[in-house]
Every structure is written in C-alpha cells, then in structure tokens.
Image 1: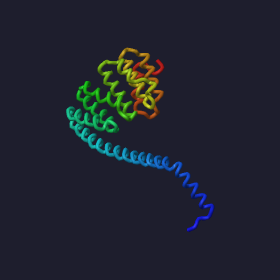
Image 2: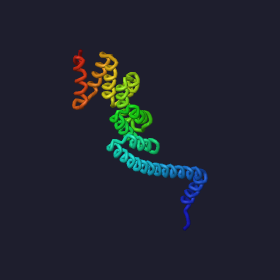
Image 3: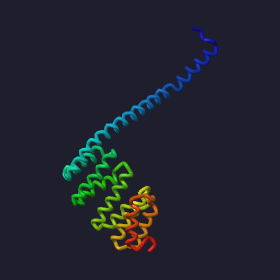
Length: 212
C-alpha cells in the first residue's frame, strides 16, 4: 500500500520520536511492570502472612481458654517473631498479657504489652497496650513509669482513657487535685453513652464531686 505524503511525514516523525525516546519509554514501561508485579507480590505475601498469623492466633486463643500460661508464652512468641507485622501479633500480645495478669504473674504480663505498645503496627492496639501496661504499673506502685506511658499530647482518640488512667495513677500518689483534674478531663472527652462515664463519675464523687 502506497503512503501519501502526509502519512510518510507522520511515519518519519514517529520513527524519529521512537529513535530519540524509545529506550527511555521501554525502560519506563519495564519499571512500571516491575512495580506492578512487586505490588501484586507484596499483596499476596501479606494475605498469606495474615492467614498464617490468624491460625497461630487461634492456637493462642485455645491456650488462653485452657489457662495455660506456658503454652500462651510459646505461641505468642511465634506471633511476635514470625508475624510481627500483622495485627494478630498485637491482638495476641494483649491476650497473652491478660492470661499472665489473671494468673497473678505481672512480670510475665508486661513484655507482651511493651511489645504491642512500641513495635506493633496498629496504633489503636498500641494505645490499648499502653493503657493496660500503665494499669500493671499502677498495681506495682510504679506510678511515674505509668504516667510516662500516657502523654496526653499523643492520646488522640484515646484521650479519655488516657486521662482516666492518669487520674488513677495520680490519686495513688496522693495527688488528689491533679487526679480530679485528670478525671474531669476524661469526663469531658467521653461521649454521653460511654460505659466509662459512670466509672469516672464514681471516682469524682468519691473526691467530693467534679467541682470540689
């Protein structure tokens, strides 16, 4: 098929363009394809890790239900070492800590919470771990360490829970006015139907009321 003059000009322009930019475009295409393949591969890897972590977490739940602290520690260790990037690791940390605390072993309960608070990937579970760890430190009368875990400028959506636990720690130190202020802050941050409201109100009433 014969090309007319305009088609020949367009063909020459295309050849010139490809000669100038062809290598770059091929390289760019290769990079895009490799990035897409890596993204798909990472998604597959994460899904596989999540499924495996879920199975280990279920094993942990069984050990927790059987009240077997030794087995709980073993399975939780597997979660932390092999599946630390999944949410199941932090869930497992909270569960393992509860089992040990219920068994009266506060020393064994602290490391899982420390791991979830500092190394876990999910901030919500990290906040919960901080609050529970501060509760253990309250039981151990290590009040300053508990307070250090709960800086209000990092509390975010957990401001009320942070303030409430800070109030507990401050009250245990004999700092009644500061405890009242913390509980007032907690009460102001809580939604009207939060179950925690009644608990905080009882604490304030014990000090003579919110405005005392």
